[in-house]
Image (tube, rainbow, N blue to C red; front, side, top):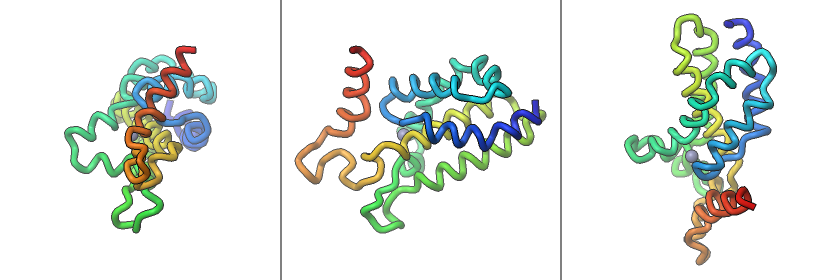
Length: 164
Ligand SMILES: [Zn+2]
């Protein structure tokens, strides 16, 4: 198991960056589920067997924003603001990637749930990095008279499109 996890880690990051687009809870869950199909065969079975956990945990990072005051800033990078007040999404991706790598390298000593949890978080942060509204201080249209555009984009457009 350890060998295929080592081989997989870079490919997983690459595939995640290509296949995940973060949005509302429904889209996050759907995209984490779909992303499994793009994984290399060496790890596909592992993640397919843990799909329900991966999908359920795909929104855990957003839920933590309600209980952890340091979590929200991990979901955005306002590129139009000075660096010290702009969120730290890129650092969250690096931290999550490094922790996931550590867990893979030590997979004989860690519980599988930790790997699934961290893979879910990494997928979530990578997805958030692909949402244009997570890259601007006008993240909800509040500066341009378009308040509410964030949930319209992330949740309602996806769900309406999915339903049709
Ligand atoms: Zn998020």
